[in-house]
Every structure is written in C-alpha cells, then in structure tokens.
Image 1: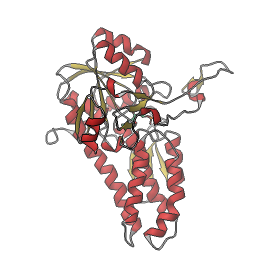
Image 2: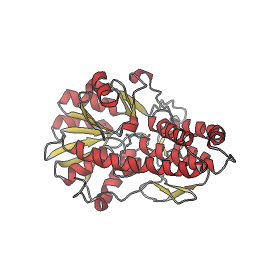
Image 3: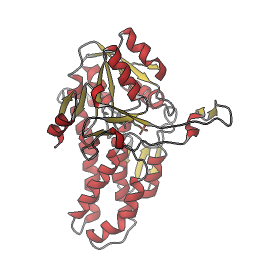
Length: 351
Ligand code: MRU
C-alpha cells in the first residue's frame, strides 16, 4: 500500500508542529469551528496543554511531551548530560503527571531520559533529534498499521469507530482512523459510523470533521445508538485505538469502548484495537491495575459552554475504561497482528 497510497490526499492535518523555537499545538478544544494553533515556549505550557486536552490522543500526548522536554532543556543550565538529567527531572515529572492513563506519555519521557543518558556535549541537540524520531516513527507505524488492519476487513464492510484516533491524535494518519483511511481507499470499507463520544465529543467534533477533510463520508451516531446499529447488521467491525495495552491484551481506551466490545460480541461483530507498540505496556499484567483518569464532572454539565444540567446535580466522569482481552478479535500494531490476544501471544510479540 505504501507505494501507491495517496497520503497527500488522505492525511493533511498535523496537530503538532515544531518551529525550531516553539511547539505549536492545534487547539482541539476549539475544533471544528476554529482552527487555531496554541504556541508553547515552556515545558509547563505543554503539560497544561496535555492536561486541558488542547492536545490529546495517546501518541500525540507522548510526542508533545517529548517536545516539552526539548523546551525544558532550554530552561536549565547544565554543562553535562548527567547534570541535565538531574535538573530536568522536575519538568519531566510535571509532564508525566499531566494525564495518567495513556502509557505513551511515560514511554516518550523514558525515551527522552534514555537519549540524555547517552548524549554527549550537545545534549540539547540529542534531545531534539529524539523528539523528532519519536514523531517520525509514530507516523511510519500508523501507515504500516493502516495496511495491516485494512487487510482484515472484507470488501464492502461497514465499520464503527469511537473517540478520535486520527491525524489529530497522532503524528499523522492515525491508528484506528488510519485503518479506516486505508480501508476506504481500498474499498474494503463501504460505510463509516462514528460515535459521538460523550462527554468531550471527540467523535462528533473531531473524527467527523477529520474524515470530512479527506472526503470520507462518516455517519455520526449517538453513543447510545451503537447496539441498535450493530443489530441491524450494518457494521462488520468496531475499530478503535488504545491508551494502554497490558501484558495479557486487556486494553484501556476512551470510555464507552468496553460497552462497544460487549455489544459487538453479542451481535457477532468483530472488534479491532489499533495502536503502535508504544501503547503496549508489558509491565502492567492486566487491566485491573491501570489508573483510570477521572476528570472534572463539570465536563458533563453542558455542551459547547451552554449548561444543560440543573445546578446541584452530582456526576461521575471516568474518561477511560478497560476492554478485557477475550472481547478483542485482533490487536494491530506496526509489528503485526495479534489475533485473539492473550498473555502468551502478547509475550511472543513483545517479549
Ligand atoms: O481523552 P483522549 O481524547 O485523549 O482519549 C483518546 C483515546 O481514548 C484514543 O482512542 C486513544 O488515545 C488512541 S488515539 C490514537
């Protein structure tokens, strides 16, 4: 696919831009009606942007954090890389604390630390090269996963996706949305449904818009319409991304993913998780031990700044859930496809 695929047509959005002096982040809080980049010149501004969801999606927050380390490097005086490692640690910790569930954040910071450990006198230059490599590897992984995942889908199938896993959530092309881009281009996918993804509306605000940029028609559904849609037979696959894939294949992803997997199994619909190997966390044995981020219940009290809920109502706002491995038909990473994931198959693929 790589030789013939028209990436220029299908993949034009870039959420993260490094200018050489600053990090520009496409402000996803304002999409789809305002396309505006937020400029960060300090690492704490990057941590704030990650926490406030100006930049979001597991791979994208890892990449943004890596650039945050590059910015932090400009704020410290250190003659050697060992000294820099010590002085940068507080900034790295603040970046790491910005969001807890997606392992890509800690993974990218670990890579930046490792790069610093082996860096010479030009340790700032080494950090910049490492951040660039993280971003470039992510884009390449997404393109590979697009080909691998699309190959699993029978021509003419309908698919349902959740949240936003596209260029907006990655260095470009996307994970689950990359599979959908590739699948549509190959006419394997005949129809795309996107769930709204309450409460932050990543599906309605971001995925529907992103696909529209590519000329891929998507049909938006309320999250609560998913089981009914599956019952009609209109979708053959649910295709989603991941924030953390455990050693046994249990997968954390946007809240609502678990109920899609349950419903898919009931209706004989296949369930595919698409994520780069940077999302695989072999140190976490299963989903029980993943920290699930809980955000401000205020995110549930209104839409677009307009309050829709009476004052004094109590809400609970967990923003991720865990889908058990036994409900997953395929995990697609750039290293290959793991069908019916379990501990043995994960270990064989990731050591
Ligand atoms: O809260 P978000 O918008 O960062 O959540 C994003 C998701 O859950 C995505 O499905 C996941 O990060 C994969 S993005 C390629």
